[in-house]
Amino acid sequence: MTTEKVPDAGAGGLAWQRRRASAARFWRQYRTHRAGVLGLSTLALFVLLAVAAPLLVGSDVADVTGAPGSPLERPSAELPFGADRFGRDLLGLVIWGARVSLLVGLLAAVLSVAIGMVIGVTAGHFGGWYATVMMRITDWFLVMPTLVLAIALATVMSRSLLTIVVAIGVTTWPTTARLVRAQTLAVETRPYIERARALGGGHWHIMSRHVLPNVMPLVLAQTTLIISSAILAEATLAFLGLGDPTVVSWGGLLQDAREAGAVSAGHWWYLVPPGIAIALVALAFTLCGRAVESVLNPRLGVTR
Image 1 (cartoon, helix red, strand yellow):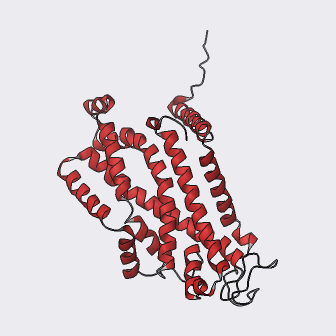
Image 2 (cartoon, one colour):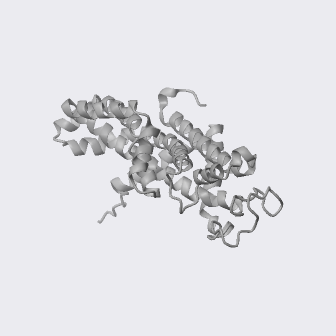
C-alpha cells in the first residue's frame, strides 16, 4: 500500500505567505491614517503626471522654437499657467519638470539612506574604534550646514543631475546613520543574536539575517522623510543656478523666473505653479513618512 505525499509549500512559500500577510496588515493600518492616505494620493497623482508627461505635453515642451505664447504671457484659456520668458507653456513645463524633480529626489534619498544604513549597521555591530571613528565623522557632518556642503560639492563638480544626486546624498546621511546605529545596538542585545553567535553565525550572517530585517522598517520610514528634503534641496540648488541647465525641473523654473525679474515685475504666474508643486510633493512625502513611521513603530502607540 502506497501513501501519497502532500506537496509541501516549503520555506520559500511560507516566507512568501508571511510577507503577503504582513503587507496586508500594514495596509490595513496605514489606511486608517487620513493624512497618510491624502499624501499617498497626492504622490500617486504627481507620479502619474510625470510618467504620462510625454503623452500629455509632448517631449518638445522645453523647445524655445515654436513656443505657443508670447514671453511672460498672462494665464488664459489657451495657457492656463501662462508662459515663461521664452513663451513656453508653463503648465507643460511644470508637468515635465515633475519627472526630473521626483527622480532626483528619489535617487538622492536612496543614496543618502544607503550610506547611513551601512555606516549605522556596521558601527552598531562591530563597535570599538571603528564605531568611534564613524560616529565622529557622522558628528562632523551633522554640525556642518548641509546646504553649504551640497553647494560646495555642486560647485566643484560638473553641472549635471548626477552631481545634484551625489551632492544631496553624501551630505544628508548622518541622521539615518545615528538612528540605524541606535536600532542596531538595541537589536544586538536580544537573546536570538547571542544564540546565533553561539551556533557559529558570522558577522555577515548576523547583520544580514537578523539585524537588517529589524532596522528596515525604520529605514523605510526615514527614506520617505528624506525624499521630501531631497526634493527641496534639488530645487534650492537649481534655483541657485547649480543644476543642469539642459533639463527642466521645478527649481530650474524658479531660477528662470528669478533671472527674468518675475519677482520685481509682479509676474506671479511664473513663480506660483512650480513653488506650489514643490510644496505639495514635499508635504505629501512628509505625510506618508509620518504615517509609515506610526504604523511600523509600535511605541508611538496611537494612530495619527
